Image (cartoon, rainbow, N blue to C red; front, side, top):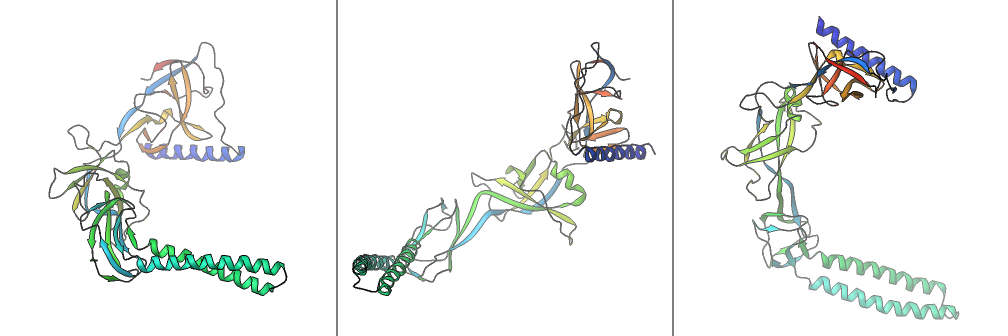
Length: 359
């Protein structure tokens, strides 16, 4: 019954603050007053550390995969003149993996360039004759149009010539090569498979009830199931946005750094969320715990008076959980901070206080 009354009280305070903020049209700071010269007598309490999670670390398994994986193909057709990168090779972004015979494409560029030179001469002559009323405007427009079309053809020919070299779009390793020197390849047929392995990721399923603990985990250990001594630290790639109705779990993407290549895509790994407290089995998800009697309502929502020397400062807090007469907060204060217990109504931000510990 006492817990229910506390929850109702906190909820009522939140609603009151929201209505006050809406009427004022803004969220003003708590009014400051200098307080009395001697100070306002107050009782104080310390913020404690509360373990927000229970039970041991959450462990779940998944398969490593490359962060980026792409099939590469020549955009143009031709005969393979050179194969430079082989399977397993490490390549950097921009490296040439293979090259087609460029002769047909280089010839198209040379032909278009020569045609443009000729048409530019014709256009110059046509403009001179047009100014002398010796040729029609239609003739001038015809030569101009032909020049523009040929310039477009030159741009395409240069683009095709540049695409006779297949380059790596990012740093990675060659997983597969399906092309040989002298082979005729058609455009858009994949000839290389490239992986980015400097960072890997794994998707693991987490029960919905465990998701808050997972997201708050202080660390994530990722280790190979068949070689537990190989362990790296991971981090959550992004906040989950959906769940799997078939399994009843939430997919969480964990990313791991792999600069030395010790991990490989396709390996089974175990992810362990959160560190342990000493040699115990509780999660290190410590949160500040404050008595409900220290809470007060401001235009910003729940808040407390933080004691700094002989001055108090109004600090907003985010209520995360209520346990009896103790409120677990997410931010605003830290374990060891000194708060005003049952703050007097006349107490304001910046007031001088005379402190005494609450019994």
